[in-house]
Length: 126
Figure 1 (cartoon, rainbow, N blue to C red):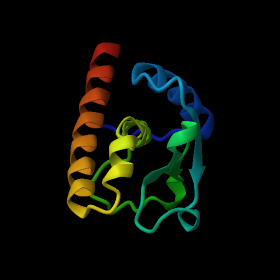
Figure 2: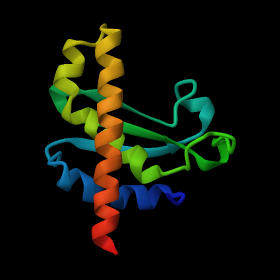
Figure 3: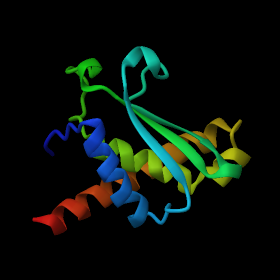
């Protein structure tokens, strides 16, 4: 897998594309590249949403703060798709927000789905 580093403008374009693919057009979603100091500790990306308004902000860690010793190759498109998938599960997540087991299983499932979607998309693009 090759590294995928994107500017905030490129992420905006990818957001439009993936929002349509994942059928999230009814959401108002903003994507921002943020420095480590402005994000949750040890986070590459995160999403904050207001389900009742279908509004969300996705924050993706700025490449300058990415730890090169990290075991995974940096893929900001994967980070974006991962966070968008959280929005698909937001009603369930809100219901189980205090359940540590649910959160772990959700993260594992979302990471698998995001990786698979990205791999399929890139394969069909070649």
